[in-house]
Every structure is written in C-alpha cells, then in structure tokens.
Length: 519
Image (tube, rainbow, N blue to C red; front, side, top):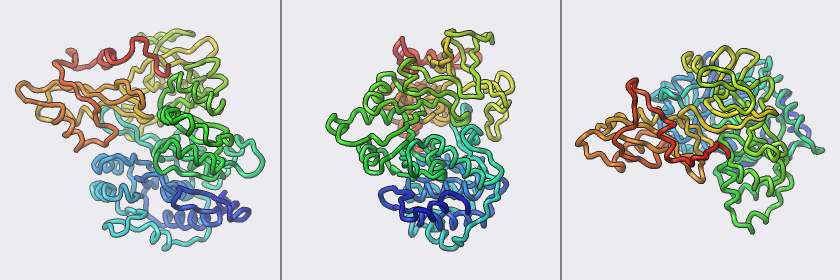
C-alpha cells in the first residue's frame, strides 16, 4: 500500500513511529498493524456511509484505530470519553455508527451505550474478561496483514458539538481541515504534502505531541499528521512537566494546545521550567478558547514566537489565524480570516458595519457551503444570514488592517478548558427535578479553565430545594464536564413574556465590566 507507514517501514523500519509510554511501535511494526486493522474494517458491515465511533482515552491503540478508519475510508465518530452511556447512545444512533472502539476506562459505559443504540460490535483494548467486547488483539489477528485496497473514497470524521436545543449536533470535518481526495491513496499523499509544506529541517519530519484528548478536532489533527509521516508521541493524560520532558526526549516539533495548557505550564516552578530543552519546537497551534493576553505573552517569552492562534469551530474549521509576530503587533486579536473566507460584521438591525465597529461576526464562504449540521436543517439555517454566510456566535470588530478582535459572545455557549458546553442540555436535565420551577445556566469566570458552569435555579414554592440535592441530581445524569460547579437559588431568571431569558444580562454581574474575550 503506497502510504506513509509502508514507505517508512521499508526505508527506516527501526525508527519510532508512535509511543504512549506503554506501547511503542516502529514504522516496521506499525505497517502490518495498519493493514490488519484496515482489512478488518473493510470486512465489517458499517452501513452507508460506513461509520464507526471511538470512545477511548488517549493511547497508541486509540490513535491506531483513528488511523485505520482513515485508511479504510470509514467515517470516524470521535466521542468524548466523559459521556454517560445514555449520552453516548444518542450520538451512536444519530450518527448511524455500526461499531464502537473502547479502552479499559470506557468499556463498561461503551458496552451499555452500544446495547441501547443497537450497535452490533464493540472492539476494545485491554478489556480482558468484559462481556460484549471483541478483544482488540483478537480482532487484529483474525485479519490479513496483506496490503488492502486504496481506492476507497476517504470520509471525514463526524464530530458532535453540544446543541442549543439540548442535544449534541453532528458536523463533518469541514473541507478546510480534511483533504477531500478521490481515494485514500490521494488522501495520504495530501497529508504527506501538508507535513512537507511546514517541515523546515533536513531528514524525516519531527514528531507531533498529542496533548489534548483525541476526541477534539485540534488534537485529532495529530493523527492526520502521523498519517502524513510525523512520528506520534501520545500523552495519555495531561501533565505539565511531562510535556516538557517528552519534548526534550523525543525532540518534538509541533503540538496543538489550548490556553488552559499554557496556564498550567506557566504555573510550574521556575527551576522546573528551565530544566528542559525545548529548542526542537517549531510550531504550536492553539485553539479551543481565547487566550488571555498576559498568558500568550508569557508563553512567547518562554518558548519563542512559535505560537499560532487558530480560531474557529468544529463545524467550521479554522476561520482566523495569527502568528506570534503578528500577535505581538496586534495583541488580543485572533487574526485575519483564512482564505477563502471573508469577514462580515453585522449590526442588530442587519446593517453591515465597517472597520472598528462592533457587531456580530459572520464569515462568507465563497463556495456557498457555510456550515452544515447533520440531521438538523433548522440549526444549519439559523447559523446563516444568507447562503454561505454564517456565524459562530461571537461579537467583535475588524480593525483597519483586517485583524479580528472578539469582545463578547452572543450565543449561550460556555467554553471551559477548550471544551464547548451548551447550557440548554444542562437546563433540560435540571428542569426535570421536582423541586425546580425554572432554571438558567450560564458561564462565569474560572482562572484556570476560562469559564465554568453556573446554574441559576428558581425553586418551587415550599419544595425545600437545596443546591446540594440539585448537584447530586446532576451528577447522576450529566458528564462531569457539563455539571454545574455552582448552583444559586434565585427568585427569577428574568424570563420575559415570550419565555426568553437574556443570558448576557445574567452573566454581566459575574464578569469584569471591561471584559474582552481573550483580553
């Protein structure tokens, strides 16, 4: 198979291809495993279009599952490993996934979700003795290591973002983030070209470090870089000093991070921060949330001008980008629109605004695609003011040089540690508590995570509701990252005659009056 693993298996078979600190594979060892996994996927009935979900913590096996899905022309469905069985079952049903990959940490919930969703096969690594799971090693061993065909059309991932109506919404990896080639051979040639385009040193490309969880769009791009020829170093769980040690040990060249990672790195003692050689790092795209100006400046002073702010969303890809050098001249900006996208700033009355005028930020996609939500034409339509012109729910302005500054958020979305959380899903759970009359969920400041979830609850008269009871109720029904970190009992959430709640007004008392997102 004329893909990178095979090429490297022939030219440098003993060179490290992937490591997670527990399972290391050379290119020579990786190649037959990719073939076996690809052939196994091709032998399965995965529907039309073929889809399989991955519900697992970072590991070598997890990364290999994603790589095999690309090779087999199967649409992968990355699932947040914090999800409950019920939450995962909804995603499995909505996406049409016909197989599920799990790790030891997620096996029990995964098997239950597969049962609820009618998914016929669950494949798991290090899950010995658990019923309902096909062991990973046996699944691989039953398949051939012969080169599989390479004519399958490559399919993008189906990511799920939390939904404003209470349920997550599916969105395919947009064309800007996922090369749409005629066949998988063409996909991997395109991935190789992308790696070569940014690889400045002689010899093989330097490794990419997988820092964030693989179910996020940005970190998952590390697997595509691996498919393009970069060795992959997997961090199973975030550890600030471990990141520095891995960079030094493996001469890591690049990684995707979020501002919370930066804050935890900066919190390390000075003697730890100065202990490691980070000179191999060439680029650090960061995404997921706006980066505070002081944090970004401190990281540039420490690591050098290697940071690239890639603003965007799962459903849109990267819409804006700014290098460290540009950012130092325009601190707080998320950069110019990435071609072919164009910025459009709109006032509340629909008037188009000019430079330095604050309004809702829209993006014009000249292809006319805009953003598309799976099985949800209403949400797709609501994101657009005209065909191909869409918003991600942010308020801001474009300066005279074309640089975008975000000042507020018009949507209800909460961004905590780079994870998007939509209040509607949490509200729909809390409102089912018999002691709750009304509820509104908002984001409030958190020094480490950027924002955290707060619930404002109107209790039923005489119910004796307590914040502790409501927190316990939420723990049983919501993934950990969605649970309110605080619950306030209030007299009203200010719902108007039309039943609407002004979330911006509810947030206002908790945020500094000079609040600027990212500033």
